[in-house]
Image 1 (tube, rainbow, N blue to C red):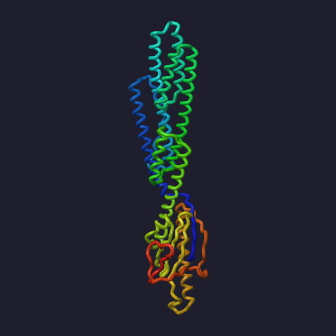
Image 2 (tube, one colour):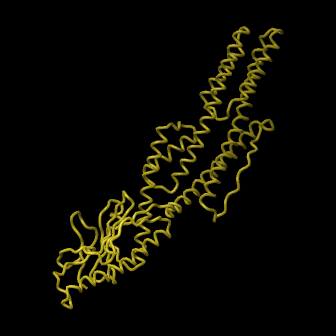
Image 3 (spheres, rainbow, N blue to C red):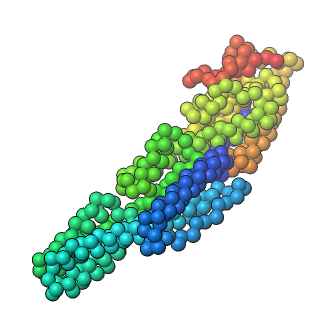
Length: 390
């Protein structure tokens, strides 16, 4: 086989798998630090409120052992994040309820000083109403929203008549309902951000750093996860995935040729990233070389057998000798390329043979004119490296 065109799809990128597993463990460490900070927050709240505090009852997942798979580590990260968020939500809601309860009691006491006996029941009723409504307030409400709601509670307590109180109560209910809906949306966005961060594990690049930082901001509630941000991150993910797939294909194919005894010249990695041809020598090919041309955009490569033109002068004086030598070396190359494809398949690359010229086909071997020296490395456009005599 003097000409071979093969393409591939990567079903199992082991390079990415290893990187993703390392990244998953780093993220697990980060999540465990967040869980520890929740313990610290709980201890501080217990010291402030004592037995009145409702301590979160969330059960944290067990940490996987060192031999766990990437998926097991990622599932641990997902469950730990969810448990930590739920624990923080419960704790924040309990703290908020105690803070609001204290504020309501203070307001009621102040109003009661100047209130008539007939107003006592009204004050009690308004306090109970406000407590019920605010009791539904999520624990992750931003400070500015919480401040607005507390001011609305002040207006409810200070209402001069029943109609004003009813309007103040309705406004308070609407505000709390809006806060609940916003909290649900933030939780959905956090869950989506966690999934996106998981998909970015193992990928590299400055744009990945930016994407990861933005997703962390979403998880913290510092920014919204809008469609534009999702689309941009997905584009970054796709490009980074193509880069790491090229890196993996380069590594697998280069190792396959080296294992067969080929001398892989400088420029092979560049050919895979930018396209172009490089030339390999092998002891069994003698005066021939393998020309390897990569098409990174199509995930494909072309392999050609190349020899130097001899002007028909062969050792035995027979014109048939060169054709016989061509076929002989073509068969060797054919065997080598089959082994390369086998190695690619064994490493998670699904290989397809797109085109092939069989040994002995007229014009199958590329013949080049030269000064009988091989040019090392990557060929420039319009230039082909040629073999030297051995």
